[in-house]
Image 1 (spheres, helix red, strand yellow):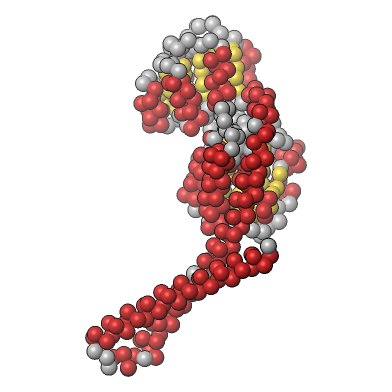
Image 2 (image 1 turned 180 degrees about the horizontal axis):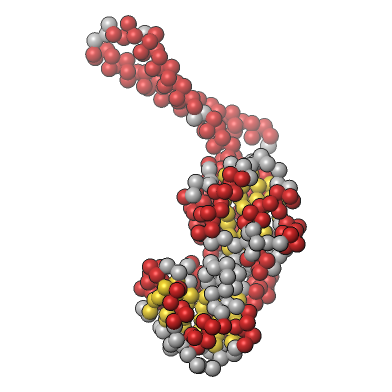
Length: 412
């Protein structure tokens, strides 16, 4: 596993605003990730980008130096100045080998999350892999790693109380909303129809909220969410025409620029000067800073939830030791799986070679003798050769795996 590395920019060392400068939506990922893989000569590449981390999973013999990190950050966001790049590079964490695999397990199990015990991270890891795999960026190692990672996270959530009374970013935000005493007939605008807002919609529906309007860049996705909410749906481009007012605005998009500026916000208010609630779960923020300064708003964002997340860590601290024990076992198991997979790949050529030898024997070396046989004898010979070929391949693989097991037992 010496070629596997992780370049991690996360909330432990940097603010969420700083991390947000490196966030890539799917459109940008489609454009940039393939170029990154080629430019940096990575054999495999996967990007995990969430509200509190941007991480590059890479398979490469290239040494990850601070200079390489700077180049990568500049590649991701060419608008970053030198001072910002230097700061980000200095705070970036790099994991290699076993530590890199362990880090992935910890991330997917929420042990490194802003909110310990939240389950959304499993879905985020799976979707990140599926997307990068669809782009042709990942290979056999990351495939095997993600499979084992998801199994590890599921074990932890099943066999420990790390997620007991789970408190995710969305549930923390919803809890604050409920504490404000918002009535069930409140006019709620949701901007963005992705995973985060879909989870929020589930909370709202569960507690009988019923007055929804959804805006999304892709109207089809807005309509899909609205099928659940039973309200109105519009394209994001129609936001500047909306003038029916609202009580609660919930926004989470992948935009790199604010969606809500003063002009759009005043248009949406429709001359209603009562205090509004804005839940902004986007990174970077969807709401322009001047909107917050100039208006009567109760504002809830990811940064404001961080203190609660830290308290959540204290509550779950007793379970972390159990989680670490599971992770250590899963790490050992993965190393063995990886070795076995390497053997399988190495022996992958053997069936081709055996088949080629058989073809030469039948069509060249013994062709005269075989041609002298009757059809029934040829049929029997073909069955015998196919049987021997199949059994030989199975024995070769079994012998290699037994040798691997014996080697492990000697080491132990």
